Image 1: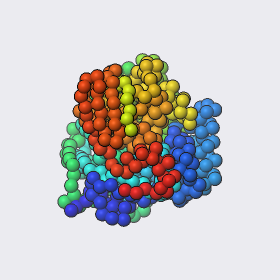
Image 2: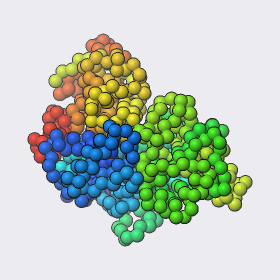
Image 3: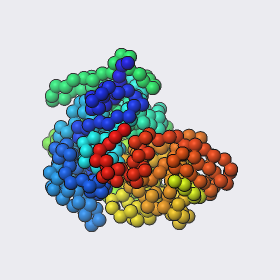
Image 4: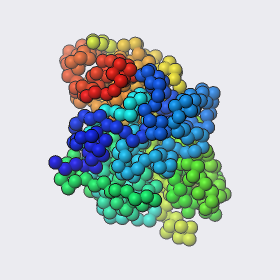
Length: 417
Length: 164
């Protein structure tokens, strides 16, 4: 019987051929933990009697969620991570290097066909490269640090085929928000999603990461983007499903008429066409996160803000996904454009997305954000409202002081694009 | 193992940010977590909870982050078992790994303050107040072994590796 991509990758790491529903033990290619999850993982590792990490070259720690440390308590958790990493000889990306998922791909720790586990739910981002990657908790991660293995149930797969090409002003973020709205927050629970079709092929790696990143917002175990059309600076083998592979569901969506999408408070699957939410006043705009803090996102925002000043009642915060993204944006003038428009740059990292520090909104304030979650209290204040949208919508809304359709700027001011 | 407690019932899609907000996750002190459990969902939850009580959710309980602090906060606050119509994947695994029992009952009508009795081995749940019973979805054998060992840390400390 034919296999899906998930079944092929898990089989490759199980030493036997497996199909959906089977339980298996897998050998993993790499693991990652952040400052939210690594300290607990270290504690669990010690509780397991762990002394040596199974393979130090395959373990990565990143200090990104509350970085730099906002208080003494968090500073001491960072210290635990640094000391453990030093003692065990594992790689640690420290303050300002960037967001864990960005670094895992940018620094080459993930390759197509790999099986990677990360103690962060957005580990599914590496599906952008055709890797089977999934989020686990700290204790599961500790188990892998000890043994190099874990147990896994082979997931059923859902195929999502996108037909047609998106229009100008519509981006990968709009595609994935649309899909999260269609499938719902538990629509792919326990499943692996395979994204394919002509709507995917022209997308950049940055855009593919945006799509894979939000697979978890449908509950998916992994989100695998077809590697056709993907350009990397090394050659790799395209993995494709067998023609007789078994899918639990197959969806086909024509995205050629899609308009910009916005998730309204307080769930990522409460998605509307922008025409339904235009005019909602915003007090904070956030550009960043593992969903949309990459170079193409910053460049997109700069197109709308070049030579302009953001609305006087809006503060705009930008956290580049990595130091490398920041440097590239610095060198090509993007950082200057955005700063002159009034935006503030934060340390590369998760920034305000997780509500731990930096950019906590006030009561009853509305935030337009390029991040992935708008659960109540997500950014640190349960009395605020988070709207999720693409970098273009974030930037154009910051300019207007209200949620605004970026396509309007394209129609009336084509020279700014 | 039998557990008896009063049910605290909430709806669908209780996400990890509402179980324990991100701003409180940066600690290794379990009491710090317990002090803020479910705070953004129900600020009075902690004051109404008696150790041994049972948390009951609708579908997709625990969606969102991989943060293990979510089940740890519930356990540290004294929740003895979580019953839900369905669980989000990472939360389900995390709870078993830290030794917090879960029972999935796809269709339940448990009401707030109902007295509930749970037999963990058989997955049998009796609603003493409403005088009816349910049987929970059976969890994979490997999870039962991990839960019986008291969590993944003690399981791996003894077994040194996984077996299924």
